[in-house]
Length: 414
Image 1 (cartoon, one colour):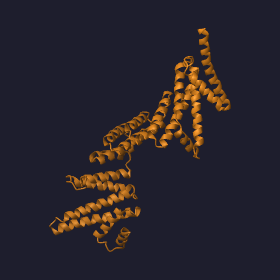
Image 2 (image 1 turned 135 degrees about the vertical axis):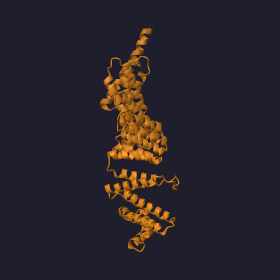
Image 3 (image 1 turned 45 degrees about the horizontal axis):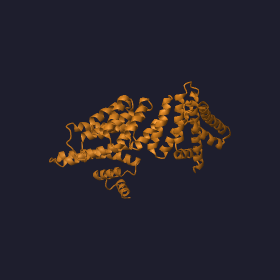
Image 4 (image 1 turned 30 degrees about the vertical axis):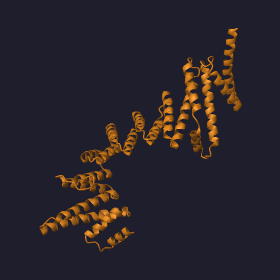
């Protein structure tokens, strides 16, 4: 009696599995939602009963049915969306839908792989898991677009790991994970993602630059320095990374190190007008050092040597690019400042002849600055600093009654 009873129970549960498959196939052929509802009911029963929960076929069809249930839900969300653009409609749908059915499907297919020793469904199962991975990626992207960065990271992680197990490295997912992590200030996670991309040799220069920018914006100068040092060591031919190192040295007041790095960069790009300008500005700071408050500090014994090197670099800058506003302005201000310093120092000279000589030297520098700043003013007529300095120079060189002085004065008043 008990033998027949056990047989009836087993048959009943096998019947649930077979009916689930039959109802699901009817749904696939005829899009019959009633059949689909019955398929889900039957597969839920079959996956709970001891007689069928150990069968790989149970979990394979449970995966297919739950994946189909997710697709129906996604379609429903798309129909509800008021978006007219198809891409925005898809993003809106993924942003709204729960991923619980997708999670169930994934767990079912993992169970299929575990139980399917003969690998009957291996090919189809792996192909479907790839589809699931893409769905997680789409969900992550929808979260990223909607600035839900924490969930974006969670779903990109799922998508990336699934694809990685199938031998596919999703660099886009890693990059978007890093972007999301930066947004929520999870810099450790962001660095992990960027480091993986660099290890894979996927746009390493961009990866390093992203990390440098991330730490600079966070005010973490120690981490930025570590990344820059590592980046330049690993990519010594990268001009942009070398520029970042130069900026670091300049920011931290390490002028000699900056000069060394700039000259290193100029070996590769000798006609880089921006590098010549930065080198000139660095020599200028070394010649006339100032403290954090902008007050003059004691000048080094070789101050005039540095000033001469600064002048040479400013000249090279303008020679390479004659219409470079920053170069023209920097050179003009350089001559103006040297001249002003001479004029100030001449006040302490008691000998009238020597004082007159210094005043004349200052005047020559002022007149040297004027055409440079006039050209800079032509390039950027609205720059007030250029206009004010020019007006001052006209007055100092006896041109206060000229039309150009008067026009400049009126323009400044406006």
